[in-house]
Image 1 (tube, one colour):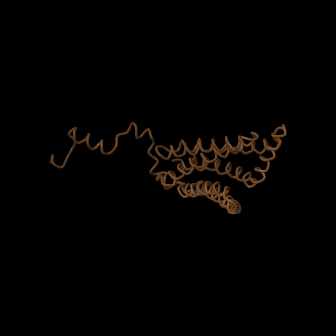
Image 2: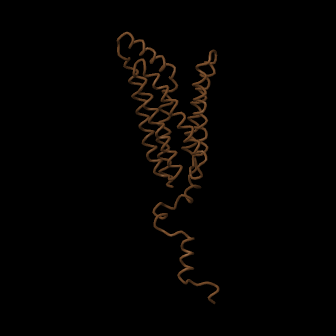
Image 3: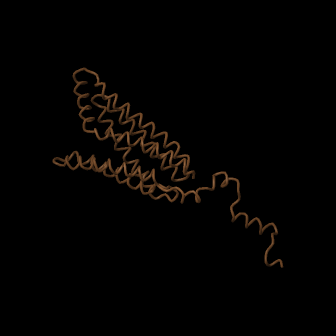
Length: 228
């Protein structure tokens, strides 16, 4: 694995997440804006312009994250690669959910359903990455998996009377866990993984393994101690 390429990809992802988190801090205001949009739609008016502006910035940061993931996926293979692809699918669904928020009346409800789906996808994918022996950011993936579990808990809590405050506290904790998780993933030491990952797919496809070489040597009349 190329350490420089890993750091470049994860840096893009991290700063994209920072941008999304900044807008997430104003999540309560964003939800109020969504309610305003619903009321405006009921009155026959279009959604306020600032909703489109906020979503546009969120989509921009989402694209930056996707670019980083495109680079990161190329560095891995097998189960790790598939898990990263699932995370990318979750990011795309998250961007679609953000776009749905600008749609009056039904938009927020559709966004909620999509959000549950991407949270579940994240939990499974980050769980796989946290156990992957060839992935440097295992600790970060573990934090991100925990943040998604808490996100589902916070979603369920909001429907229980008198527990809204706990849900708000959880949202703050979730934001912190997400930042810590991506920071750990970005800052993970890659040097210990370079040796084990240095054998390229070309080598695996075209160079014989040591076992096959040994067997071919023995079958082709190579030197043995018994020959002397």
